[in-house]
Length: 357
Picture 1: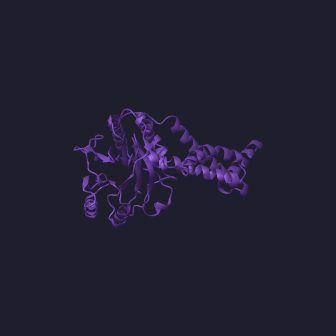
Picture 2: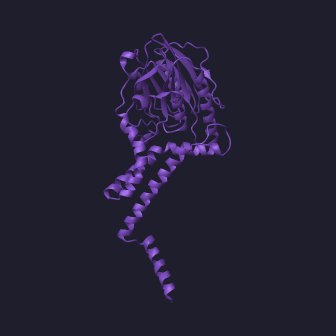
Picture 3: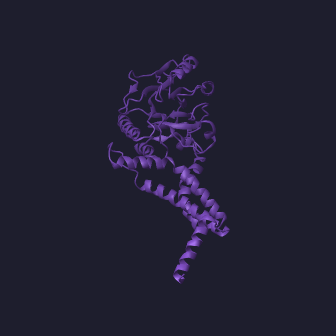
């Protein structure tokens, strides 16, 4: 065997040993190489979709596909940041400072807003009227455990209750429990996941309450109410989940139709529901650009995750799919989430007041 062949053989043997029987030092290096991969790929995903997140216009072409990829990436922004942060902490203990530095941008991106949220404070009460309480609950259409949610809402006693995934079973249950105290109601009970309802102690001022949003005619309600002499508009919204391209296209249509409706509103506006998007999404940013404020971001604390919370997933880091947004003279005074027994979503609650003249 020549010297060249012998060197090649030794090199091949060392690679096999590194792959199948590494030394302790080699195992450590493999481990930190894997951490570098996690940090690098997570940061690349985040930066890519921050730079370009696809076009909101049109329903065909590569732009829609890239929009969907960006939307999915943004769904995972917190989890990618959390994984990156864990890698950075491990690297700090091992004094791998380059890896620590690489983990910082995405870690800080997701952790700083959470930490700052604990400093949120309500607006000056002297400039506002008496708050009204609003609840938004995704009931989960297949949820037959009705007692917990009924008890939770009964104890809260909100002025207006908004429901998604409103099924015939839930219609019977909620009508029996609340019809006396909530005489003003609008609802569509369905056996799929897109039934909807609004229960209100306050009288509806408008006759037409169901509006057409998107092409699939998912029930969407718009009601006009009065509080302390101030008229305001409340929407119950449930956009489609972006789990397949047909739904992504419909979700974009729904958003465009809603934006057109919001642009025509003259009164303060409250949006409630299961939006099937997170606070990192293009849709959320679009509403903020229009001047809307999100309840949790404004006066909430912590992450505000609302899904998934069914069984053991309740104790894992979730994402915020349920939101309340306000526009105009409406101001969030409080915003928090409930338990939602039997549902895969936590209900969200808010107290909202209007600026005094």
